[in-house]
Length: 383
Image 1 (cartoon, rainbow, N blue to C red):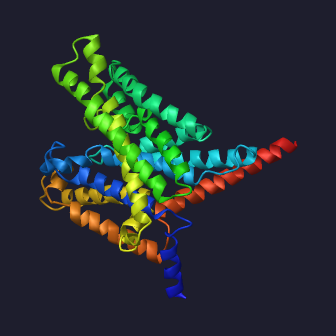
Image 2: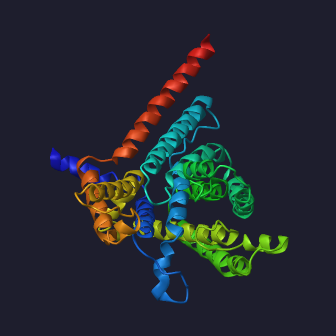
Image 3: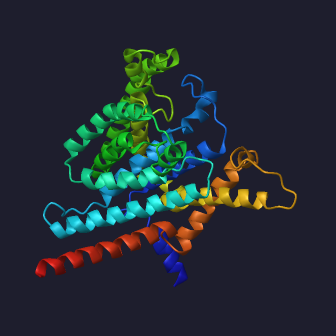
C-alpha cells in the first residue's frame, strides 16, 4: 500500500495532469532567488562569463512573477464566460489566495528578514489577475506591453512624491512589496497568463516559439532600450529629457523599461526552454527540482524561516555579539546547505505527503471560502 502511494505521488507531477517543465522553471526561479539572497554576485557584463553570477539579480523574481500568471491560466475555469457562479467562485478563490500569500509575506517582514520579500507583491498581483483573466489573449498581450512601457514611468513619478513620515514610507514600501512595484509588475502576470493559455496544450513548437519570442524581447530590452537609459542614468537626470531617458534603464530592480522588456523576455525564454526540457526523458532525473518547484510558496518561505532561525539561535547564545542578520548569515556560506536541504526536504515531503504544506493550506481555505461565498449568494438571490 505504501509503495503504491509513493508511486502515485511520483505520478502526480507527470503529464497530463501537470506540465513538468513549469515545475523545473519554478525551481530555477527559487534557486535564483536563494542565490540572490545568500551569495555575493558580480555586476553582470554579458561579454564576461566570469560575471554571469549576476544573472540572479532581479531576473529570478521576475521569472517567479511570470510563472504566477502561467499557473493562474492553467487553473483557469473554462466556464467563466458562461457561468456567473463559476466566475464568482474562481474570483473568490484567487482573492483568498492573494490575502493569504500577502499575509505570509507580511509575517516574514514583521520578523525583520533582511531581504525584500516578494510575497506582498505576489498577493497584490493575484488581485490584479482577477481582472486580467477576463481579457482575451490579444488584449492581455497588449495590456502587458502597455504596462511594461508606461509602468516604469508611473513608478518613477511615485518615487518623487515627498513623504513627511519616514516610518509611514518604510511601512508602505515593505507591505506593498514596493521593491517589486505591482503597478509595473502587472505586465509580468499579464504576459504569464497569455503564456499559460498557450501551454494548456504544450508542444515542442509552442515551447520553441516562446524561446524565440523571449530571446527577441531580451535582445531588445538589454541591447537597444536599456543602454540608452543606463547612459542617461549615469549622466544624471538634470533635465526633463534626461529623466525620461533614464527610466529606460535595464539595471536589476530599477523597474526601467529596459529591465521590464529584457528580463520579461528572459523569463519567457526560460519558461519555453524548461517546458521543452520537461518533454524529454531528462525530466525524470530532475524530479527533485520538480518536487520543489511544485511547492514554491513553501520553499520560498522555508528559506527565510531558516534565516530567521539562524539569527535567533546565534543571537541568543551566551556571550554572543550582536550579529548583522544579512552579512552575518551570508558569511557562513549558507547557499549550498540551504538550497540542497530545501530540495531534499521538498522531495521527501512530495514523496511521503504530497502537496506542499502552505500550498495545501492556501488551496483548502480558498476552496472553502469560495464555496461558502457562492452558497451565500444563491441563498440571497432566492429571497
